[in-house]
Amino acid sequence: MRMSEGVEWGLHCCVLLGWLDDQAPVSIRRLAAWFELPQEYLKKRLQALSRAGILTSSPGARGGWSLARPPERITTMEVVAALEDGLDLFSCTEVRQHGVGSEGAGSEFARPCGISAVMRRAELAWRRELAAHTIADLMARSPEGAERARRNYQRMAS
Amino acid sequence: MRMSEGVEWGLHCCVLLGWLDDQAPVSIRRLAAWFELPQEYLKKRLQALSRAGILTSSPGARGGWSLARPPERITTMEVVAALEDGLDLFSCTEVRQHGVGSEGAGSEFARPCGISAVMRRAELAWRRELAAHTIADLMARSPEGAERARRNYQRMAS
DNA sequence: GACAGCGTACTCGGATAGTACCTGTCCGAGTGTGGTCGG
DNA sequence: CCGACCACACTCGGACAGGTACTATCCGAGTACGCTGTC
Image (cartoon, rainbow over all chains, first blue to last red; front, side):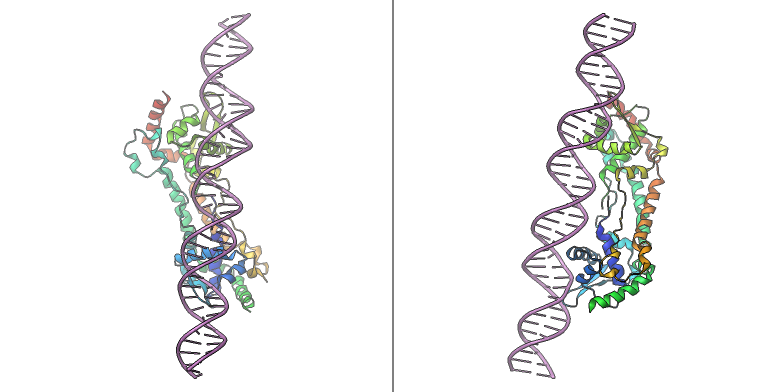
C-alpha cells in the first residue's frame, strides 16, 4: 500500500502558490519547471485539486493556477482526499459473511465487523491528524522558503 | 491508495485461529473454505504472517496453521505490517530539492521537509491506534462468533 | 509384536498470468490576452 | 483614435501506453502421519 506520489506534488504546489499569492495565477509550465516534474501529469493532478475546490484555474493567456481559498482554510486532509479520491485505506469486503464460517449465524452480522471497526478507528486517527494541519502551517514552517520562492520566481519570469 | 485485501483475510484468520486454539493446527484447505477465499493465494499471505513470527505452520499430514503467540500478544499493527511489507503510507521523494525552486537554497534542506513531517505524524497516529488493539480484543468483540466457530468447525471436520 | 516401506495430506518456494491502478504522454477543443489592421 | 480580427498562451477533457503492485494459479520439493507388509 503506497500513497500516490501526486500527493507530495500537490502539497508542494499548494504551499508554493500560497507563497506566490501576489503573483497572479502561475502556469503549469512554471510549476512543473519549479519542481522538475512531468508537466502533463502534474496538470492532471492539479485538475483534481480544482474539482475539489482547492485550486482555481483561469484559462487563456496569462492564465494559470492559484489557491481557491486562503491557505489557513485548506487542510492537508483535503489535499490528500482530493488526490486519492477513493481514500478508503481499508475497505471491508465482509469476508466473514461468506463460506462455511458464516453458516448458522444469527443477527450478529447486523453489527459492523470488529476488524472493520478497528481499522476505521485507526484511519480516523490518521485523518484527524491530517485535518489538524493547514497549508498555512506548512508555509510557516520554512520562512526561508517563502523568500526564496519569490526571489527565484522573479528570476524565472524574466 | 488502497490497502491490500489480504490484510482483512489475515486478520480474520488470526481471530479464527484464536477461537479454534484447542483444535490443533488448521489446514489451509479448511481456512480457505471457511471464508470462501482462493486457497493458493491465501496460503501465500499466511506464509508472510509466518515469516513475521505471527503464525506457525506445521508440515505433514495433520499439519496446518496456528498462532505463534497468545492472541493477547499479537497486535493488529503487526498483522498489517507483515502483510504490507513496505508499510510506508507516504514516502517523501524530496521533490523540493529539484528544479528551479531549489536554486540558491541555503542549509534549509538539512532539516526534514515540513510536508513529510506532517505526513509522518499522521501515519504515526494511525500505527499507534493499530498497535493499541490485539487479536484477543477482536476475539472478545463477538463472543457468538467464538461459539459458532467451534460448532461449524466440528461439522466441517466430520 | 516390531520395524521398514509406502501412500497420503500437508507446507514451502519459485514461476507464471491476469488485472487494476499509477504514471506519463499526446491530441483536439475551448477561452482569454494582447497585438494588428482597417476604418 | 476605435473597433474588428487574429495569433498566442493558456486550461480542459479524453484517449492511449508503459510500469508496478496486487490477485491468482500451478508445479516440484520437502515433511510428518498412518497404514501395510514382512520378519
